Length: 127
Image (tube, rainbow, N blue to C red; front, side, top):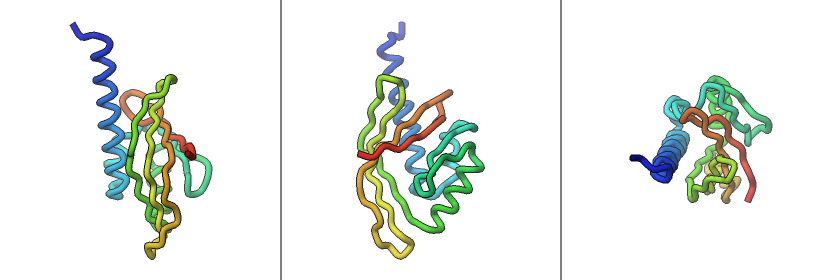
């Protein structure tokens, strides 16, 4: 018999794998691979512009614009499930301009809602 604790551990591992895949694809600039981790109706913050985009096409357009102006990389450093079920990912983020000058180097929190095994919403919290 599978215990609830075992099921919980399996779900946590699946979520960690999903998050790892999403960040690796983003850092590789592989939009198609990143989108496979996202719900079709995903809501994504436009940290670079403000507000949110919804859906795969809007994310593709946003990232394409973003990467034409800046070069961000994000490396997860911590993974916590919050009491409300969202996932808190501590992220070391480095943002450079296209000439390589560092614009930001610090830690932020990315907060994810997972629905149907996919990323449904992401929010950003400053540390």
